[in-house]
Length: 187
Ligand code: SF4
Ligand code: SF4
Image (cartoon, rainbow, N blue to C red; front, top):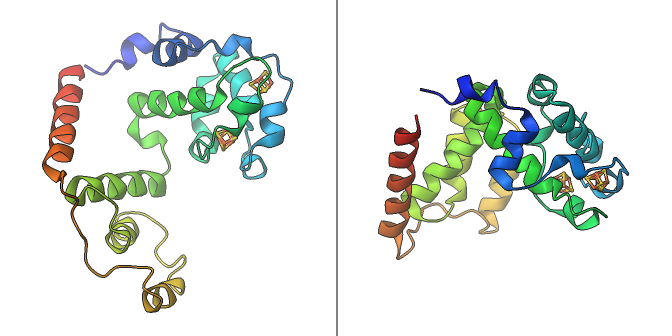
């Protein structure tokens, strides 16, 4: 059974605390995180807004907005916070909580990139960029965005034509299998 049934009874702040050990209530809305965030201009909800919505338990508003998916996890917000809120980790946990609640909450192109990235790591132990780009575009990414950059990158040797596996690929696959088994048990 999905954990969502029990999630409804818990506050969002409690879920975040359970996932991270962090207390979003510590945020006093000084805005220093948002002032330093390199993605703030692209976000409709800036980091300090997200902290406030966690405090208020406004789950729908947070998850219906795309801002949590724009965070680069660069941790500038965390470094700037005068009260050690670790908003980068909290935002990361919001993505985990959103995906547990409903995988379709993530925008389609982000889901496609996430899938393509993990498939590359499982297959080769590293990212094979050309394979990643092709899979991402075929499964929901923006089809024609940046296509004109590809020939130049190929010509300059920036994109390999064939993948190369790492030595420890069997260990990587064991990690993937263990994660898949654990998530089946959790379901
Ligand atoms: S971790 Fe995310 S929210 Fe924090 S500064 Fe970087 S991009 Fe912005
Ligand atoms: S810097 Fe810290 S205390 Fe200030 S708004 Fe951001 S998270 Fe809240």
